[in-house]
Image 1 (tube, rainbow, N blue to C red):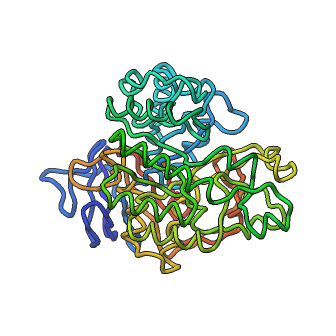
Image 2 (image 1 turned 135 degrees about the vertical axis):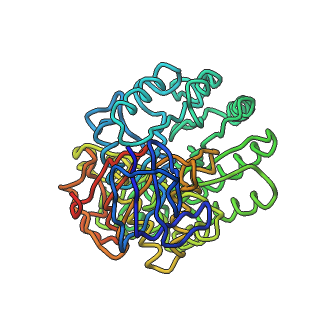
Length: 428
């Protein structure tokens, strides 16, 4: 169908547009910015008066659980949550069961996503077979099947030699390697940041060096192999500084940060709040502020949800025994817009980090609104606030410390591939 979105404030970071312009969609593409093409007739007109019209969000890391862990979440539930959160493109992590290490699993996920039709779900292929950290996966077939990157998720590689071979092999096929930088020996079974809070609570701790040591190793190998790497979920000031130096030196490296790392700190673990058990752990206020600066200046080009839904039982054991992760699809935009309210960055920069920034990391044509771009749009009222109520979440995982938080930017419409897949309550 054809849609015209009129009277809104069009914000497109990729093209530097911030103006009151109408947007016209025909089928799956944008056909007009400002003026409609000749003889264009809209089947639906969306009045966006007082609202921002922006590209649909692009999320580089979402654990969707299916296939294999449907007791935690399903593709259907998480695609619906993504639509409500304004996310139109998301990369699923390879730690499913079976692991995404062959073309058949990739095709299964893509087929299910197409049938649901609520978001574009792309696959991150496994770096090693079964994520065992030893034997390299068949990256050529994964690339041919549609994988846009490869990763070993949160599982460690058995040696630096395996990592070198993996980087060389991935580079042969033009694949970006997603790395979760953490030295497993320094982590040593920890579950909280090594600092005053973990000491007082008696929790097994993870030092900041567990991340910075791994970042140094990965950068050295990437430079040696001339590989393109992407750091997933950085959490420390030291890592952000090393990233900036590496980029200045011409190493092909990018990075993202989980939205919750830009708002929470180790202090939020106080009281053994398992909702704040995440990996990497919440760090210090200094780390949080350094990550904010790195996002604002573009050193870190993407904010992701790092979505990890869990069933209630997973968070109801003693803190070290609970499963790490936050259900983050429905709060990605809200947490990003709170950075604008805090004065961390302006609105254009903030939207770039969840639209064109992550898309550009992988060379994807999403997160932008030029003529001919995919018709993935969100419309939100920046002045209308909403409060997260976990009992009303669409995600099967309701494990989030943001229950009761107040957010700006109530989403009125999410449009994916030219179809309205979510309408806010005010427009239902």
